[in-house]
Amino acid sequence: MRLFETPLNELGALDRTAWRELAHRDGELISPYLLPEFADLVNAERHDVRVVIAEENGAPVGYFACHQAVGGVVRPVGAPLSDYQGFAAKPGFAIEPEALLDVLGASALIYDNWQGRAPGRIRDRAGSSILDLSDGAEHWFAKRRSLHRSHFKKMKQRIRKAEREFGEIRVVFGDPLGERYDALKSWKSQQYRDAGLIDLFAVPWTEGVMARASARSFGPFRGLTAALYLGNRLAAVETGLVAGGTYHSWMPAYDRRFASVSPGLILLHGIIDAADELGLSRIDLGKGEHAYKAYYTDFEMPLASGRALRPGVTAARVAGWELAEQAGAILPGPLSKAPIKLRRRWAQTAAIEPDYGARLMRFAVAFAQAPKRIAA
Image 1 (tube, rainbow, N blue to C red):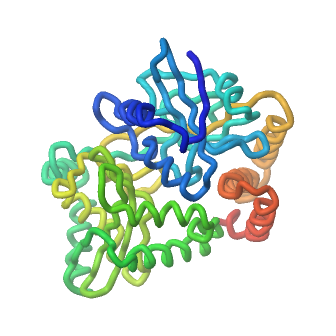
Image 2: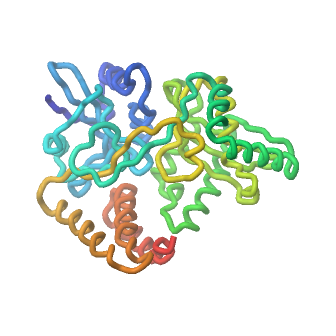
Image 3: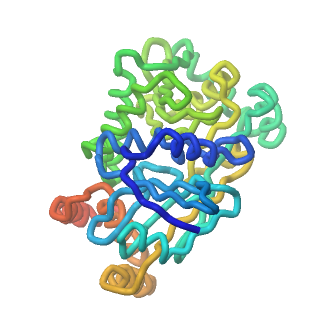
């Protein structure tokens, strides 16, 4: 196998076509995040996206988009926004970590949502929750109700309560004036602040990527904004990516005044109801341990987080974090998880801030908020 690396904006039309084809396994798209169009969205804000092309017998067999190495560290394109990462490649594709690091001129590759055979050392595995709507929304609802009768009965009760207390339920798609996206941004930013997390809407390039996606409402790769109204009041909004019949739910949020009726789930039901009209055969809810997903998930797409390292200073830094995590495990109560949470915060901060000075300043703010995060 031969590897080549090039700036995204120098990639030709033939390579882009081959990339799209490889992102469709057996004719079905793995994820919108593995398409060149997602890399384009990110590159429009960051201007540092590179592409690794893997070839066998003169033909491309895999494409991997990532950011230019900073301090010897490479991260997949869009991290931490990208819910899927890795190569768009043929089934069974595998890459030697050393070869990948060599072509990128890097000491480390750090990833959180690798799809396929992950390079290097895997730290954690998780699954992205998939709703299979290939037989239509009506069939899907009938199947899930038979499996989780109590939950869907409660949802009917919540929907009736919402109509009784707040007015008619409407689910609206699109956002021509941008006002629904603005509401989403306000609610989500408050949620991040309350949890002591980095506000992704306060970071120029991440907010720019989400705004570009939300505004891209047409074409084979597009954003989708869905909004729930209770009476005349906006109660919940989510935005996501659509391609190849797959909708990947990306950023959901709701007005807390309506929390008693589960507006986020009512909105999800509305999206599922409209799946046939929207041309959707799959909804991807992403990974994460949320209790509600058990009632909606048909299967999970395996994802991995981990590191590929070459010996040196960068590897030593990573080993230092791991030793701190092991040592922290003996501490009492919530303190035992403090090193893990700080390591995750540093990894997210490093992905968001290419500039090292800005990264340190942002992490210092996070460290000051550490008691809030440790207690969470």
